[in-house]
Every structure is written in C-alpha cells, then in structure tokens.
Amino acid sequence: MQTSSLAAWKELALHCARSAGKLSLARMKEPFTVEYKTSASDLVTAVDKEVEKHVVDMILQRYPDHGILGEESTFTGDPGKFDTLWVIDPIDGTTNFVHQQINFSVSIAVYHKGEGLIGVVYDPSRDELFHAVKGQGAFLNDQPLRLNRQVHLEEALLCTSVFWNKRAEQMGIDQIVKKLAGKVRGMRLLGSAALELAYVAAGRLDGYVSLSLNAWDFGAGKIIVEEAGGRVTTMRGTPLPYDQKSSIMACNPAFYEELQHYLSLNENT
Ligand code: IPD
Ligand code: CA
Ligand code: CA
Image 1 (cartoon, helix red, strand yellow):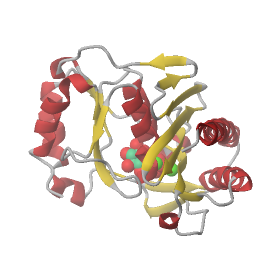
Image 2: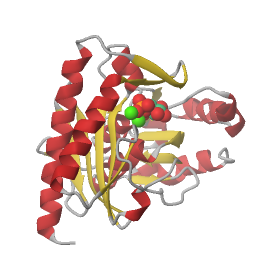
Image 3: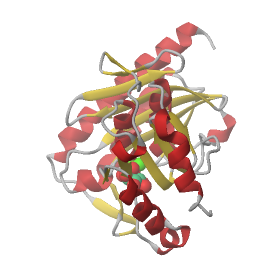
C-alpha cells in the first residue's frame, strides 16, 4: 500500500464524513419521511438514503474502481469483488435522528484486501471528528487518543446496544446485561454503535459490547479503538469480520480478559 494512496483516501474519508454530517444536521431541521424496514424499531429515513448517495457519489467520482458496502445499498456492485472497500453508515443512530436527539454519527472506513486501514466517525451535533489510520494512531479532531489509564472492571463505564427481541433473549442478552450491570460502575446505551466505539477510544466509555452489529456499524470504530490501544474482538474472542454481521466487544485492554470471560459464558450463537 502506497503512503500517498493512504493519505489521499484519508483526506477523502474525512471530507465525506464532515460533509455527510453537516447534510444530516441540516436535513434534521426540515420535515423528512420515515419508513419501517422490518418493524417500528427498525427505521430508515429519506435522509439516510440521501446522505449515503452523497457519500457514494463523492467516493466513486474520485475512485471508480473502489467498492462500497453501505447500509442503504446505494452501491449496486458486489462488495466482495473489490480490493479496496469503503464501509459506510450514513446515519448511525437513525432512531435518535428521528426523535431529534443528538447521538447520531457518520461512520466511514476503508478496508484493503480485508485489512482495516482508515476509520472515521463524525458527530455533527458536537462537531467531533474521531479518526485513525492503521499504524498512525487515533485522534479526536487533532488531539491524539491513547488508552493508557489502568481501569479495573469494577470501575468501568460500559455501553451496550440491546434489542429486546426473541432472538436476543434466546442468545442470553438479559443474562449478560444482568451479570455485567452487577459488576461494573455503570451501563449506558447511547444508540449509535459507531459513536459508542469512538467514545471507548476516547476513554469516555471503558467498553462497548453488542450481540449483533452490522459491518457498517463497527467498521470505522474498530480501527479507531485499536489505534487508541484498545482491544476489539467478537464476544467469543475471535477476530471481527470486516464485511458481515458479528457480535463485538471493544474495551480498555486492562480488563479485556475479565470481560471476555463474562461474555463467553453467554454467547451461544
Ligand atoms: C443502529 C445503532 C444502534 C445499534 C443497532 C444499529 P442504525 O444503527 O448503531 O446503536 O444498537 O444495532 O443497527 O440503524 O441507527 O444505523
Ligand atoms: Ca448503524
Ligand atoms: Ca444507519
């Protein structure tokens, strides 16, 4: 991988994230249509689709030979056929967006031959840009992020994304949350996985766990957490895929093993 390509991809990813975030924020103040995808708790708005198209157009105009894996499927090619793949979620936290809440973000990652190279998560409401390039560290705006604080599990503020449906129940989500909640300092649920992962990298949260996320939810956040010195795996402790649904645990490395022990007892997917 040429350094010049990496730098150019990073600049484009940062530009797309800022531009997409500003577009979402502007559209939030206007009326927009909301549709149910599978249920009343699985939403998509006209803004999600517009913003994804905005990002896809910018990427393909510059790199017509790159592939894109986006939540709203604006890109019609087969993502598996491309060496360089952009993994994007135009609005992560659509439910918050619909309810006029601030916790939503844009998530953009670049993978090359399956390796995560660039991660960008932008929070337009607070104008906070979290970003990382593999081997070059993680940043919040221009401030470096480093997880060097020793945290015990008892002192940890953890975040999760629970969805209380039948399948989650069968997978044991209630047991996991119950066990963890009794052990840690506190549990939070912000409603944007990408932002929650960025907060782990920034040390605002000490860990994030979810039984099931899509690749576009964690593609960028994973790279940012790892570059800040955190650990990210599936709940079984295996490497995360870059192009499929997975469980995830991301945390300060100080208590990774202890947390994994709790989670591995419960994951039976
Ligand atoms: C959702 C958010 C949420 C997580 C869900 C995701 P969306 O993404 O990241 O925090 O709990 O699993 O689907 O639908 O708002 O892009
Ligand atoms: Ca998402
Ligand atoms: Ca989304």
